[in-house]
Length: 112
Length: 113
Picture 1 (cartoon, rainbow over the protein chains, first blue to last red):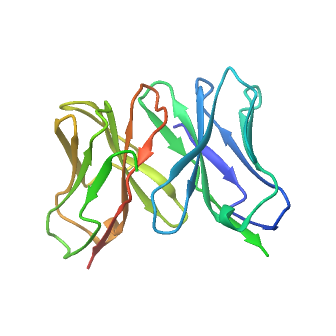
Picture 2: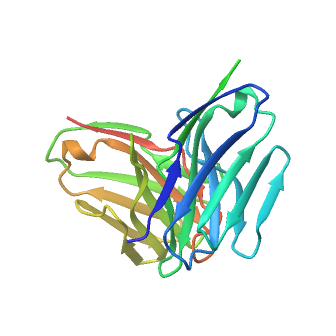
Picture 3: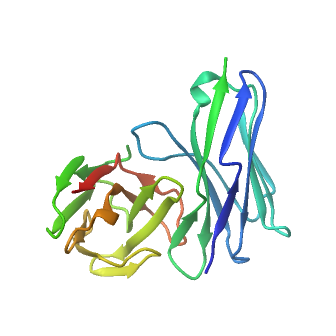
């Protein structure tokens, strides 16, 4: 079946540095790729998304890139801050069904 | 949280008992989803609904059933709870097909002893 692989599972970066999280997907028909941030004790919250007709999207300090040929997409966080510490999930739509499939998550630690 | 309420927020139940979790939305979104979240597994889809009385299975549906008699409510039932169903359960809602902008509830922590 379709799946989404996410790497790394844990990432520690110095405050102010950049963080990159990478995902690959298997369904070539996927056309929607959201990223979610989950803080402790809360539900996942959408932070940015990208559609297959766009290669890159930015929103302040976060950006997402998509390579449809390679079936890769990545989340980039620049100038990291303590409040960026959380678990981040990538996901991809499954065209033949009305759903999205999630990666297993990346725990991001911002070091002081 | 985008008008989604999950109840209860926490529950402890005994093995073999039935359990029902409720998701209520005020956004009038067509799609509703139940996920479970476990360490090392991320978010896995249990069941989802694409309209009143229209539901389908996700990747981990065994031991679970759902019902949606109204647009705003999506119920998840564990017919006979097992310890392997100890998890955090999240409900999500979405407006459009092919899963766009799913909004999540706060979660229900279920412990089966």
